[in-house]
Amino acid sequence: MRSSARRTTAILGTAVAAFALLLTACGTDETAVPTATASAQGTATAAATQAAPVGVTVTDLMGRKVTVAKTPTKIVTTSPSALEMLYAAGGTAIARSSTAAAPGIDTSKMTDIGSAYQPNFEAILKLQPDLVVADASAQAPLAGQFEAQLKGVPVVFVGAVKYADVATSIRMLGLVTGTAEKAKTSADAIDATAKQVGDAVKGKTATKTLVVVAGRDGQLSAALNDSFIGDMVKIAGAQNIAAELKQSGQVPGYATISLETAFKDNPDVLLVIVPGNTPGPSISSIVARTFPNLNAVKNKRVHEISLDIFLQAPGPRAADGLKELTTFIQPDVKLGAAVVPGY
Image (cartoon, rainbow, N blue to C red; front, side):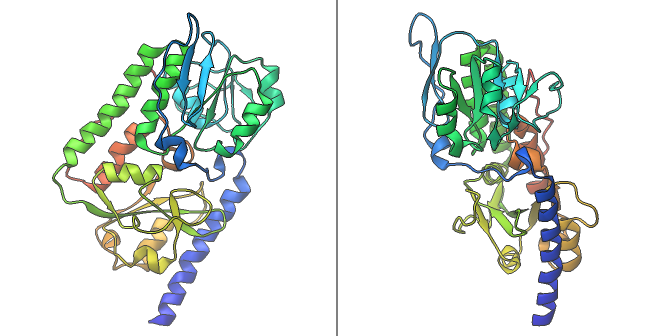
């Protein structure tokens, strides 16, 4: 039995390492695993007040008060999430980070300002922007550099550590870009999706669920409740069996785990975030082959979910993502597609 367990661990460990190597090889800009600070989302609000006859002041998701003196016409976004949230709010951008792309957004004429994790501040300043939209989830450690390098340019941090932060960020962007009505429509649709899902799963038995992701070093990590995907599976009617683990590793909201820890509680649903496109067998297929007695495997409830939507570029597409998660976690619940207007 011990020999078999060691062989199983080696097989899946090798597969995870292969995924991680691919992620590292491809890893520029948003293919890196994002970092976040809980305080950026935990206390921030998007309540805006008229600070003067002209201009709008908001408290962004880093807790910073920012005044935008006039309606911006040259907006730079510095992460995929920032770009998607801006467009959901009804705004447009003249620049984006290197790999920022999303359905419905034409990025071909936008200036590339470099990696979200190493933005080219000189290139940003050359564009003479009147607003920079940065990312509190991915760029919190760079906040000091943004303020020092972009003096005189208002910088608003948006982000998403929790599902509700997406709507908060979109409403805030609507206020500072003069598109408040469009932003409200999009944000209301995102909030309505959470309410619809919450109402649909109310009273149902929570489903034992585990979300795992492979990191750069080949280590498996489990999503905790205070991660973006952890918050979403809770809304979708899951009992996150990793909820009691202590945060560990480099990514806030996640705990590094062994294979034994991952499967000891025998999850009914296993959600796998795969780091990039990889040749050969997927992690989920290897799990199914090597752990045939897991409830999730026996009942064919091992699912690979979007790296973009749930980890690297959380934003407006999370509304559809929440409905997808609900069909995996509570399959008897029937939900239509979520549509975020203006995006």
